[in-house]
Image 1 (cartoon, rainbow, N blue to C red):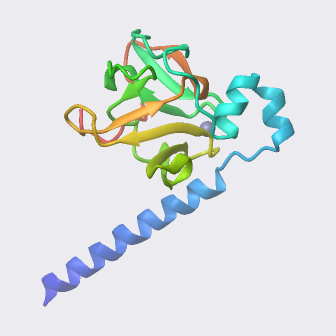
Image 2: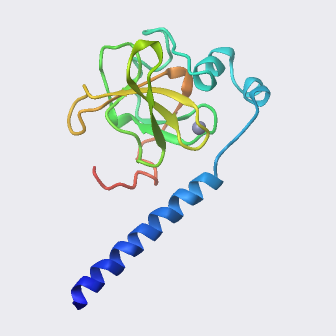
Image 3: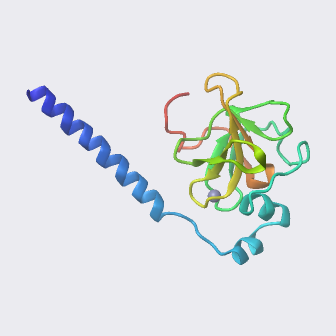
Length: 168
Ligand SMILES: [Zn+2]
């Protein structure tokens, strides 16, 4: 009986912790007007990141980029992907097998263009990043197919502090 109670209390604690986290993220959202985004971004970055556009394959800055570092959101600067999860997918867009952590991105079902796909967005500012497909390499089997226009690279020798899921 005592054990059951302990499990129940633990479950409640976990639930409360995750609810708090979601709440905290909502209040930390970056929200700007269209005019503000337009002023901040290039025409191509605005079209892709704020209007759910797609850059032409093999034309972006990062599809064949191999330096060690971190890719962050072009709109709000949140770290999204690490170079050690980037792989050569041959699809013409930068491809990663996982995001820097589960909180950084949000996934939405996307039924546009007569396809059912999973759209990937920045959790903090809702920038459109690209799509995730189930044809990636191990360990996740996922391919995060991301527009160069939605991200910015910076060099880093060591993984950033928010690489926190401990799976590496
Ligand atoms: Zn963002």
